[in-house]
Image 1 (tube, helix red, strand yellow):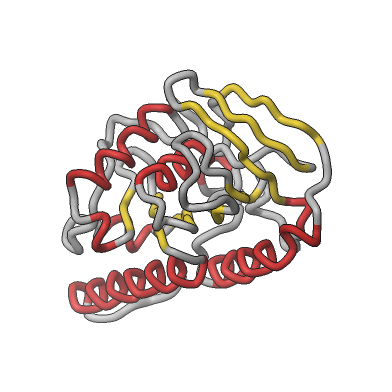
Image 2 (image 1 turned 135 degrees about the horizontal axis):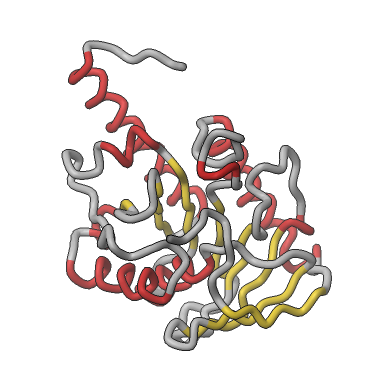
Length: 227
């Protein structure tokens, strides 16, 4: 059984600072959406949830659309930074290359990249139009994934694995994922992934579907009560 937040790929990581001049503006855009996700409970860390590990992460492509598969480099929040109240450039890593079948990632930054890096990489390989990926945890959206008609990965496939990366590619080819730009992770409790041509587009998609899930829950339950 896999554990939340544990890196399951072979990491070739170079410890060095990311350049503010190159990455600062995009990192601030990702941080803004991460903050919105934190305020809506889509990213964070709670002792009683997911074995106490941090959950949720954000990323964005930094290379040209024409980059080859396996080399579509991207910025991503670092492993186990989801619970940090304040983050900055030093809490991000750049994934330079990845190989699903070898289960290997090459990266650099002050922190190791998220354990979900393979899933993000698969989304970028699925289409050059995908430029940002937001991975959230939402019980209400995840529980209503089927009634809402969200594409869903095979429940038998664990997160952060080569199999999950292949599942993302399958969803993009065989389901309405290119149209809806959001999917549920069937074997990853509460896991929801939104895609977009920018962090703003991915964030807007995530929030629209979250609102739909709450609206449906309200109709089914006669109201909504926050814990």
